[in-house]
Amino acid sequence: MLSALQDNAVASLLDLLFPPRCAFCRKPSQTTICDQCEVDLPWIFRQDKSCLAPLLYRGNVRKMLHRYKFNDRFNYDKVLGDLMLRCLQDFGIPSPDAVCWVPAGGLKIYKRGYDQSRRLAAVVADGLDVPLVGLLAKTGRKKTQSTLKSSAERIENVRGVFSAKAGLDGMVGLDGMVILLVDDIYTTGATMRECVNALKATGAEHVVCVCAARSRT
Image (cartoon, rainbow, N blue to C red; front, side, top):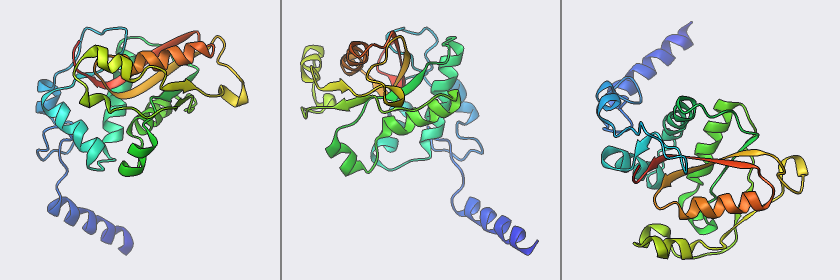
């Protein structure tokens, strides 16, 4: 009984010193998305089938994703993953055979300490109750996509960079399977298209793409 009271006291003290905040606007909030952000965030209501996304990549969404990618805000995994699940449900996407992700380069993972897209994919796979499988490998090192301005540069920069690995349960291919591909941000679509092509070349029948935010509708 005493231990439970002590735990509650510690929790209350932590809430006082570090009050819970909205993941987007950072104002004190008892929920991860405050009531005002539920109204004001740049939600996407008309979906582009090339890649589904709940939010536009601007304003507080952009700031939040930067905190997630560069400031070790691991607690944002669940917030963003749940929003992607909500988006898939709203759009009526049936459960896939497996969930995979757009892999980050080894140097980025080393510097950051984690692969943010894999973490998001894990939340989505858990919510859908389907396997999370690392089906893609990054086979080359090129420039960071965000440093390139034109679509043509981005397309050329990722050409041939991704390859599909073995299928589920040791199978060589993905024949007839529906795969859900997860990434954090969709800009020109060049990276997603390369990954989709690699998965289809290994036999995937259909690849559905979803990200946390996209730069335009």
